[in-house]
Image 1 (cartoon, rainbow, N blue to C red):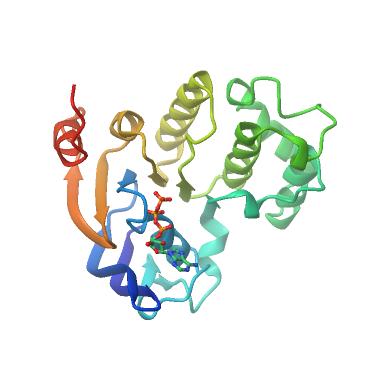
Image 2 (cartoon, helix red, strand yellow; image 1 turned 135 degrees about the vertical axis):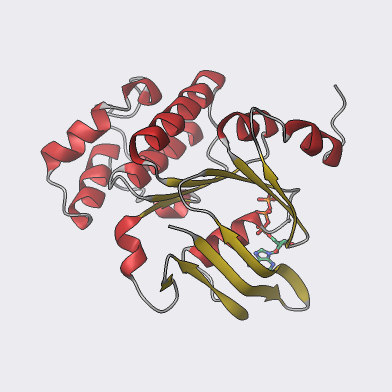
Length: 235
Ligand SMILES: Nc1ncnc2c1ncn2[C@@H]1O[C@H](COP(=O)(O)OP(=O)(O)OP(=O)(O)O)[C@@H](O)[C@H]1O
C-alpha cells in the first residue's frame, strides 16, 4: 500500500524540521531515506508512526490516516531507537512479550526467530542477559528482530546499520532483501551509509532541511553517482 504525505509540516519553535507539500511513496518497494544530520529523517519516521503530532497536514498509510486510526499498527513493524526496547527483560522475554501483543504463541515466535540465526550470530538468544546489558549492536538487532516478528507489510527502520559490525551489516542487507522478496513488504530504511542504501533500495529519497530535494529511482545502483556528488564524496 502507498504512503501518502500531504502538506506535512513539523516545526520546533521557529525551526522548520519537516515541510513536505505532497509526496506519495509507492508501496512494495525498499526505499532508502538519506540526508545530512538534522535533515529531518527521524522526524518524518516519527510522524509516520504517530509518535509526533504534525503542525500541519497528515500521513496516510493506504487509506488510513495514522493519527486518526490505530488500524495501521496491525501491519506495521518499526524500530527507531532504544526507547522501543524494555531494558529489564532478556531478549527472549521481550520477543515473547511482543509476540503476545501480536497474538503469536511462544512456539511461533521461536520459529520465526530461527530464520534469523545468521543475523543473531549466537549473541542474542540464550545469553541470560538483560537487554540493558547487551552491546549497542546487539540491542539494535533485538529491536530490528522484534519489528519483524509480526511479518509486517510495512517495516520502518531508522539507521539500522548503526552499531553493527561489518558481517552483521551484510547479514542485515541479506535479511532485508530476502524478507522483501518473500513478502513484497514496503521497507523504509534511513541511513548515512550510501553504499548499503544503494545496495538494497529500489528508490532513494534525499532530504535537505526538511524538504525532499531528490526522488531517485535506483536501478542497478544508478543513484550512487548522484548521491556521491550531492554529499561530495571523492572516489
Ligand atoms: N525534540 C526536538 N526539539 C527541538 N528540535 C528538534 C527536536 N527533534 C528534532 N529537532 C530538530 O529537527 C531537525 C530534524 O531532526 P531529525 O532528528 O529529524 O534529523 P535526522 O535527519 O534524523 O538527523 P540525524 O541524521 O542526525 O539523525 C534538526 O534540526 C533537529 O535539531
